[in-house]
Image (tube, rainbow, N blue to C red; front, side):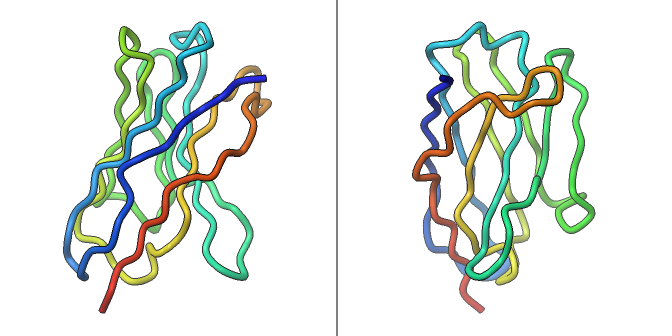
Length: 117
């Protein structure tokens, strides 16, 4: 199963920025759609953003204009630049790899993002 490792979370104030990173070393990275997901306490995990193998991006309405997803196929990395952070962005953030519409990776520990008001 696909193993992924997220990093870059932390505690920031409202309006601050963070850059999350995710490494997926054991797969043919370039063929996968990569997604960033988040799960807030008491809520279901939700898709925040995704980027296809061809570089097309998609964002949840709640983060459009504030978050930017990118990928580096050579490094097998996907990133999430998060700007203008809000307290409602507080959650554990996970990345995963999607192929043919199916999530292929195991859900790891994720990385905690906490935005203080």
